[in-house]
Amino acid sequence: MEQICVLGLGYIGLPTATLAASSGYKVRGVDIDPNVIDCLSAGRAHIAEPELQASVARVIADGSLTVSSSPCPADVFLIAVPTPIKEDKTADLNCVTHAAQMISENLQNGALVIVESTVPPGTTSNVVIPILEESGLSAGKDFYVAYCPERVLPGKIIIELMNNDRVIGGLNTESAVRAARFYRRFVRADMYITNLITAEIVKLVENAFRDVNVAFANEISLISQQLGANVWEVIDLANKHPRVNILNPGPGVGGHCIAVDPWFLVESVPEATALIKAARQLNDSMPERIISWVESVVPPGAKIACLGAAYKANVGDTRESPALRIIYSLKEKGYELYVVDPYVENLNGLVLVSLNEALDSADCLLLLVDHDEFKSLDIDRLREKFGNGRLMDTRGIWVKGRTIRVS
Ligand code: SAJ
Image (cartoon, rainbow, N blue to C red):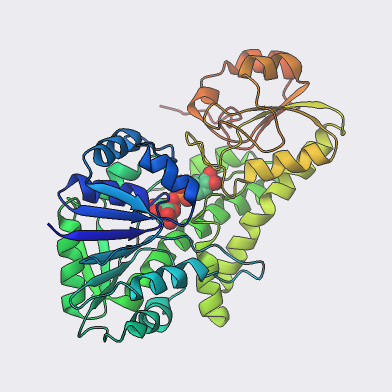
């Protein structure tokens, strides 16, 4: 049975390790966080994601997934560690280099190393391979290297890992073909083979595409506000054009991917990324704009029901959440907040309350995340209680336009 070693048991590494273990591989999962190892050893997933808990319990119980703080020699190594962004908006590659060092100490002839972490273009060739070659083995000859980005949506990770097409960049064709063979056991979709640099760029442009498009929607929101139009109506009507498909404006872009990845392109080619950089900056400025809006409606001390703290609808993840940025800043400014999020378990320094308590206690309402639970609220009753001015909807779930459709 082939031995797989997955380094990094986070949002991507753990589901991938679990799927690999469920499809017949013997998997060693590695993480530097002792809490993660303890939790998984007891058969519990430390991440909330549909279907994950049950499969973790199963593969830990049957021994196909074992976890440890250090790797073992393997046929396939998979790097799925985080690449956070530094203060200066460049990538922090410490986790990637540490993972590559650990692999290098366990690398044997014929092994395949796959990088899944999102990295600035060129990282696999210029950073990862030199570290792996410290083993004394030669890349492309004695061992194989591929870059295969993940493209899964939080909240649907397991389904999308199996069903999304994959792009595989190989150091050479043999590397890519071996990587495709590894994934084929649990990926049902098409796989496209290319070189390392192309696969690295593809990952980043996918997320930059979404970031730029959200920024475009946010810019339309600023334009509409200045000119006295309803942005939701403007976008809704523009989207009736057969070749226009504008995304939704909102309080900003969060999550650990889209708010970060475009910076890796800016870091790599600063002279050619003016549009991507401007989009990132505009999206980053949205929380401040929402805060100014709140300040123009009610003064500090007012009681605000804040609906949503997660970075997007129907997930409990608060990483880089614009909603959370807004909430903490309003709290600091002296507002009395009633924060509601049915998906988030706890928030540092804040008490979460029930929706009823928030609606009963607050003077005004700030909708920050379009969770399904909020969409089904009775808008007429909310209007009755708060009045139009004190109902601040940053996601457009209630405040629609007044277009009349003529049939
Ligand atoms: N957002 C808007 N308006 C929109 C769409 C999104 O304001 O019309 C905001 C969301 O509220 C959220 C942020 O953008 O704060 C990002 O949410 P998302 O659902 O667009 O994306 P993520 O970050 O959850 O996942 C993305 C996905 N990439 C693309 O759709 C191109 C996913 O496929 C990637 O695997 C993931 O990034 C990643 O890991 O890179």
